[in-house]
Image (cartoon, rainbow over all chains, first blue to last red; front, side, top):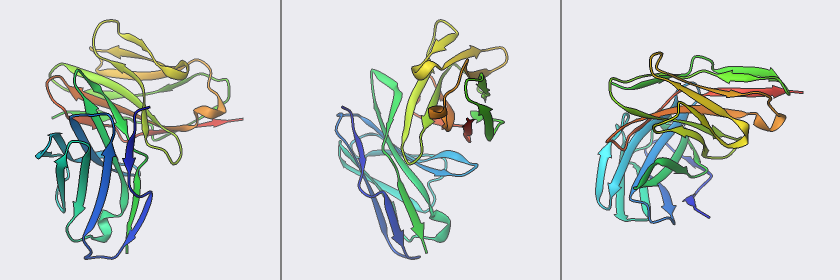
Length: 113
Length: 113
């Protein structure tokens, strides 16, 4: 069965900390995505990657960076966490020739205090 | 720029009643359309998709949606809902030739006994 695994379900951090959110997929997918989900705002794309070491900014990249050193792993980095980054973070992956289906992880609820 | 509008943030409906969740999109080019469902404490999973061909698409769990190009809509319907359909539903659009998915703000469907 296909799987996208996010390392933590809940995470609590302090403002100013550097935070790493990890995502691993076991489907050999080329494309990986990071979204944040906020009530009333839906899902907003932070970054996506279409190949190892390749990345593109999404709609809200400010305050975030990403790393994709291996095909199966896509990390989201909060360089200096702030309270307005408290949110649910969702990782997803997809692959040609069926890019239309996104496979999602179960999410990481991050609280920045 | 693309956008997706889900006008109804919450839809309460009694069990075994029909339901329609509305989705409108704006795009000047060819698009692919999707509905995803998110059950409590889970990631999103694909309910159905429109890529081309027949404008009426059927998905899992008895849901269907109709693509209406002239009205730029992709409304989701189910003729008879169950308690287990209680979830949040997201409409999404992807422009042909890109990797980027744009999600709506979501509609919370609450099925009442």
